[in-house]
Image (cartoon, rainbow, N blue to C red; front, side, top):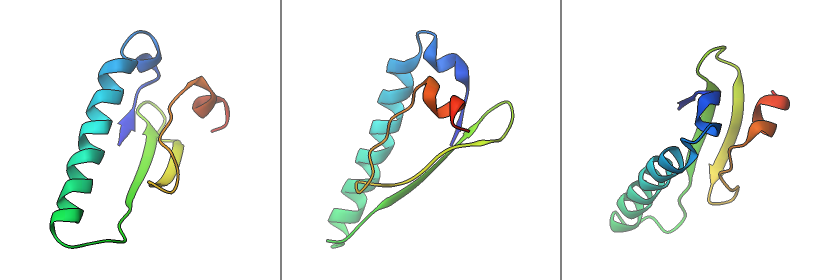
Length: 73
């Protein structure tokens, strides 16, 4: 997923809702297909530079986006 730093300027709620919807839909798909041990691999990249902001396996690692993601890139 590509993420713009602009989401931190008032668009965070919309972005978070879209990501959580994607995670929920993926989780339901896995569970309904009989998978008991599942994970969703999420790679977030800066929309402008392509730099990697996050690389997580949900639900083992939590999804969180903040200015610190860009500071630690």
